[in-house]
Image 1 (cartoon, rainbow, N blue to C red):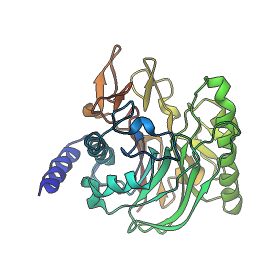
Image 2 (image 1 turned 60 degrees about the vertical axis):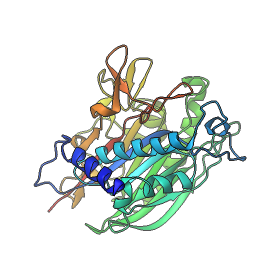
Image 3 (image 1 turned 90 degrees about the vertical axis):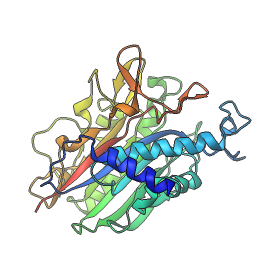
Image 4 (image 1 turned 30 degrees about the vertical axis):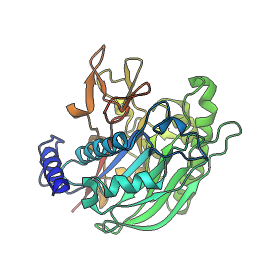
Length: 341
């Protein structure tokens, strides 16, 4: 009964959020979210997770972990808008166990998600994952694309293909968490260029086989839309009037340079480290399934924010090593796919 009461409260909250959704539109919502260190409280001897144990620097206990799970489920539900997202890309999950508990011990259990995950070679043990509703997205295949690094192993890129039950279209999904800017932006740029090359190799293959391929790329890229990893490495187009089917388009460029809104805040400045990048076929408004820049958003509900020196910033889980009972240092982003009747 307690879980049911929480579900009712959160559902009521979500229904009262303003996401500019009109009743006549039929939309399928996708969400992308960096969860900021979703670790369990157990020591994994194969990764550097010792800080996230009861004896570690973060004094990470079961109670704190369960509280974070609850907070994240609330953020995901809010980002979902009127309906539960059919697909959710996640960054910074430690293992399959934390994803399973997020889906079984919070109100998200009612959405009946399945998920894809694989332990990556990342030394900190943080991975990507994909949640999907199997009655709405029929999984065909999955791969984890290795991004080879000589000095610092990084996360793999999750690649899934499936059929949207609503339209019968095949949708190719990529969940990314590219190498961080650790050591400096320019010093680490080559690593993100390497990740971009791995992703581009696969998207080029898809578009060569079918120039009408429907591709959706999401995640935390640790770069901004104007960085070369996007414009050169991945070949993204930031500005366009008419999209071409065999190209990739960054729908988050519209937020670049926005001083009051972004998915992440660093040194007092908002930025878009989290992106939606789509193939041109997805932007064809005459197609059965399409979307546009206007259907991309950042979930910046007040409960996800806190006051800082300038205005607001994400209400993150951790302030240094202290648990701040927040959500994440990133805000969830979403995109609505429109069904053209």
